[in-house]
Amino acid sequence: MTGNRWWHVFFATTMAMLAVINVFSWAPSTGQRIGAWATIALLSIVYLTVGRRALSGEARFRLPFALALIIGSGALVACSPNLAFVQVIAFPLLWVVIPSTRVAMVANVGLALAVSAGFIVSVGTGSENLAQTALIQSVSLVGSLALGLWISRIADLSAERLRLLDELTATQAELAAANHDTGVVSERERLAREIHDTIAQSLTGIVMMCQRAQRELAHERLEPLAGQLRLLEQSARDVLVETRSLVAASATVDLGGGIAAALERLAERYRRESGIAITVTAEVSVELDRDTEVVLLRCAQEALANVRKHSHATSATVRLVTELHTATLAVTDDGTGFDSSEAEPGFGLPGMRDRLALVNGALAVSSVPGGGTSLSVSLPIGVAA
Image (cartoon, rainbow, N blue to C red; front, side, top):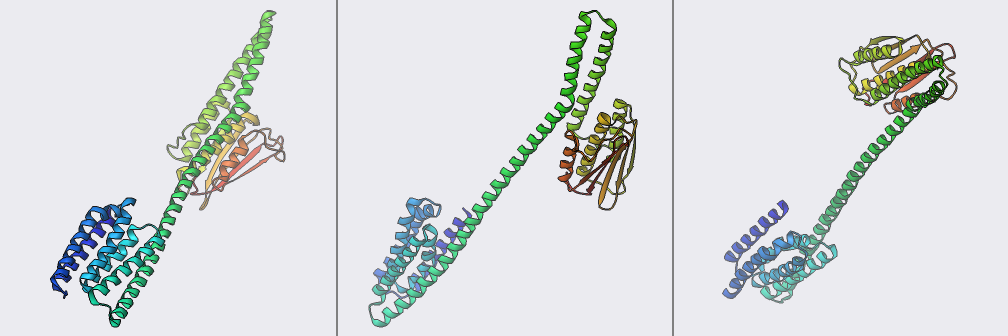
């Protein structure tokens, strides 16, 4: 609409200048001057009724307006050669209202011919007049075609860029949705593996112990039954701990007080649940962003969960050290260890490697049977999780 407003101003200005030219220019007769006034008025009316709608994009008004411009321009020049100034607005408007480049070129040729015919009517058919008419209109036509084709090319390139930008925006939105869906699926798969590896297996054991307890009860063997009940209670407690750990791993991270305080709270929870003596040391000399702190806390959480589930350790240490460009988290225990050359069981360590890979971090695990386990996490400081 803003562009159309400028065309309205341009057209009104051109018509006003034509009126001024018609007042002060020479005309062979009063009838030609009156005819020029009438043509200016008619062109103004056509613009207000048809041209504005053609500029607004209504296809059915484009061709009638183009024909009116061509005929009106020729009629004005036939009344007075000085009114050939009308081409200043006529040539550009033809390019604007006609969407097809080829049709616009044909319309430009038609306008040049109509104005040439107007020159012949107004100045005669003398050889000199014909030569001047041919020269003037040839230059006008070539200039209009060159400028119109150049602007049309720019408009086409702009439209193509806009289309590509829209496609890029749509693709980015699709990629964002796909990444979100992939993340959701990945998290579901992780939870499924965790539930299978921990809670489901523990519940299976509880079911088997319940069946055994029923057999003991059926034979009225109270002492074995009491032992089975104690095992059931302990297994139920273990399942409860596993469930709480799984919920905690998926819950919103509480980093109140910073990473050092969060690690201490995490260690305190594992001390209560497992009875393992866990010592935390945090030497944070460089400020960490929240995403980096979340990654470090999740890695410590997974490492301590492995210590509780697999190590049979009596003590463990958690040590965090920050340097200029790197944060290092080390978790060690005095447990039974495992053969680190074999494939890593379960989902914990592979899942930790995947999480660290997203932030250009690295995981190193060192363990030998009977010699405890040492886990080391390093990642660049300032990389988002």
